[in-house]
Length: 289
Length: 313
Image (tube, rainbow over all chains, first blue to last red; front, side, top):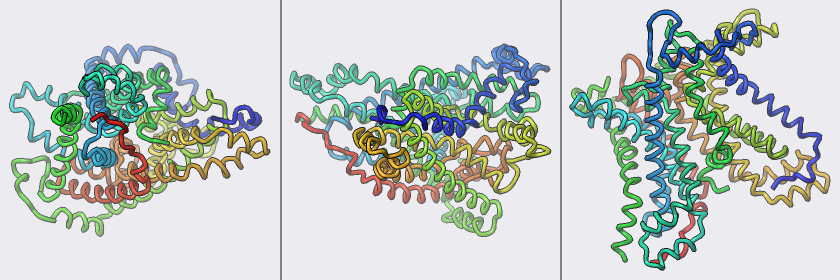
């Protein structure tokens, strides 16, 4: 698609240099955070003398020591586990619902189909901040009476509420994936007398695996990185609320927080290295160029 | 056959309809309802059944006229949305065009790098800029300027109202939004027939001429799409600002947009006033709905939906 054969080479390095220069703050900011987690002192001031390599921050984070002195301890493994529960929950629900709904919007004629897709688009653009007040009231009104259930319920609710935010876009994305599958596969099933549900389960799902993977991955990232819903609904801490709470605390040892932040960034980095094409495609999801 | 179709339709669609009902439609009604009550500090027993009519809206309009904090917030919203939108749209366009003219592997790496702000956990992303713009000498920006000898002592950027604060929040959110435009424009550029570009090259056109005469005119529709969509996003976004304000990196009044004001009034520390927050949220939604309507008109939504063909009845 590009003008590879005919492109003059001399400007290429110039364009790259300009873009790299524009990207410098971004590269610098993230690099300094990650490097600081391996240093005795923060190196955000760019002084080489503050960089003294060590892994003690990481050791301390996993032992839950927040301050170098004093006995403040946090169970970071538990906090990471909480974050993972939310992320996997959101991912699972979003994937299931969008795989179901995306199929019928792509393949079945019914009255109200167009209106439904339009509604999804409108909901995706709808101000989340207007919803969250009502979503919280619903939470208050459905709160369990039994105190032993409260924490479980808060997990359950935050996963559902956060997943709901991702549903409009994921359904559109999934519909787009189903649209790419040739009709002949389906006809063969329907002519043999299989029901739509059976066709979806037996024929379509195996064909749509890359799409399912993409939606699951985006759902996971959405749940993993969430701050607002987690701090509003969830009783337990996740990595996001942990960082939020400890940045201002007097006793916090900054490189430790940098290590916690880097730990929190890990899934993003892993997806970056393994699923590049998926990410670049997925973010243009729902858009027909 | 009819019964079977209904069965399978409800199988496919009911989970989604349930989610949309419970987490969009009911909350929306709730939010509008709360805006007509005196709800404070989530005291549902006391205030939920106490309807006070347009009291919250009157208070809000009174504050618009007389409260310096709200005026700062409104001004911030206008400036923030306006300038960030320009950065998002044109930054995305420049990145898409720039990467169009370089080799594929460099282009992919650059695009991926610019997805980083969108994909990073918000807390980590905020942490990065917290250190970068920190007002003391550990702040990266300050130490660069100190080392270059441009300033003699560290400058508390986030406390300089209004432009110091605005620069930071626009910068931080601008980087997140640029990737959206970049992705949309890139996928559009990839669909332009290669022959056009090669023909122009053979005729001796420069990259600049190719961009101006061939590429940019073809992006008109996408340009409008990105513009309206980003406008809506920026109007209602608040997570990336939330921590910067909470951590006191930036001044509270000039670092808060209307969307963040709604959130902090409903869920922030100290005195919470959900009635007022809900009223502000309703106003924001009305602006959003108008914007959304324009978006749909611009997008010519009809073009995007094709009837499924050959459904076997």
